[in-house]
Image (cartoon, rainbow, N blue to C red; front, side, top):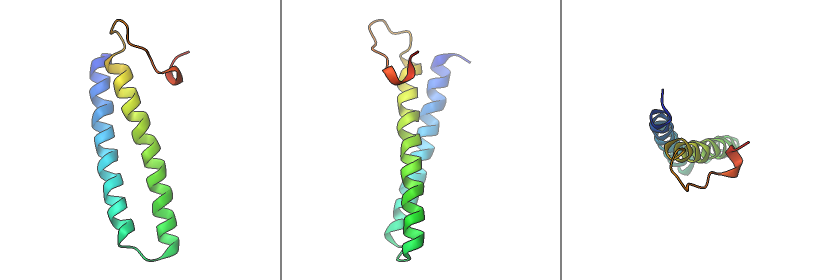
Length: 77
Protein backbone atom coordinates (compact mmCIF):
# COMPACT_ATOMS: atom_id res chain seq x y z
CA UNK A 1 0.00 0.00 0.00
CA UNK A 2 1.37 3.40 -0.94
CA UNK A 3 1.10 6.53 1.18
CA UNK A 4 -1.37 7.99 -1.33
CA UNK A 5 -3.61 4.94 -0.90
CA UNK A 6 -3.22 5.17 2.85
CA UNK A 7 -4.26 8.81 2.67
CA UNK A 8 -7.50 7.80 0.94
CA UNK A 9 -8.15 5.24 3.68
CA UNK A 10 -7.66 7.89 6.37
CA UNK A 11 -10.09 10.19 4.51
CA UNK A 12 -12.71 7.42 4.33
CA UNK A 13 -12.22 6.72 8.02
CA UNK A 14 -12.60 10.43 8.81
CA UNK A 15 -15.82 10.55 6.80
CA UNK A 16 -17.26 7.61 8.78
CA UNK A 17 -16.25 9.25 12.06
CA UNK A 18 -17.83 12.53 10.99
CA UNK A 19 -21.08 10.77 10.15
CA UNK A 20 -21.15 8.98 13.52
CA UNK A 21 -20.47 12.24 15.39
CA UNK A 22 -23.35 13.85 13.54
CA UNK A 23 -25.65 10.96 14.52
CA UNK A 24 -24.62 11.16 18.18
CA UNK A 25 -25.08 14.94 18.26
CA UNK A 26 -28.59 14.49 16.87
CA UNK A 27 -29.32 11.88 19.55
CA UNK A 28 -27.89 14.22 22.20
CA UNK A 29 -30.35 16.95 21.20
CA UNK A 30 -33.28 14.60 21.79
CA UNK A 31 -32.07 13.07 25.06
CA UNK A 32 -33.13 14.48 28.41
CA UNK A 33 -31.55 11.86 30.71
CA UNK A 34 -28.49 13.44 32.34
CA UNK A 35 -26.49 10.19 32.47
CA UNK A 36 -27.11 9.42 28.82
CA UNK A 37 -26.23 13.00 27.85
CA UNK A 38 -22.93 12.72 29.72
CA UNK A 39 -22.11 9.41 28.02
CA UNK A 40 -22.96 10.84 24.59
CA UNK A 41 -20.84 13.92 25.20
CA UNK A 42 -17.88 11.77 26.25
CA UNK A 43 -18.28 9.58 23.14
CA UNK A 44 -18.53 12.63 20.88
CA UNK A 45 -15.40 14.12 22.44
CA UNK A 46 -13.46 10.87 21.88
CA UNK A 47 -14.66 10.53 18.29
CA UNK A 48 -13.85 14.18 17.61
CA UNK A 49 -10.26 13.56 18.68
CA UNK A 50 -10.11 10.52 16.41
CA UNK A 51 -11.58 12.58 13.54
CA UNK A 52 -8.98 15.33 13.96
CA UNK A 53 -6.14 12.79 13.98
CA UNK A 54 -7.51 10.94 10.93
CA UNK A 55 -7.69 14.22 9.01
CA UNK A 56 -4.16 15.18 10.07
CA UNK A 57 -2.80 11.79 9.02
CA UNK A 58 -4.66 11.95 5.69
CA UNK A 59 -2.90 15.22 4.91
CA UNK A 60 0.46 13.93 6.16
CA UNK A 61 0.35 10.72 4.12
CA UNK A 62 -1.08 12.46 1.07
CA UNK A 63 1.58 15.16 0.97
CA UNK A 64 4.51 13.28 2.50
CA UNK A 65 6.69 13.48 -0.60
CA UNK A 66 5.69 17.01 -1.68
CA UNK A 67 8.70 19.23 -1.77
CA UNK A 68 8.43 22.10 0.67
CA UNK A 69 5.57 20.57 2.67
CA UNK A 70 5.97 21.38 6.34
CA UNK A 71 5.06 18.25 8.24
CA UNK A 72 3.11 18.37 11.45
CA UNK A 73 5.67 18.16 14.25
CA UNK A 74 3.30 15.92 16.18
CA UNK A 75 3.91 13.10 13.69
CA UNK A 76 7.66 13.43 13.11
CA UNK A 77 10.50 11.82 14.99
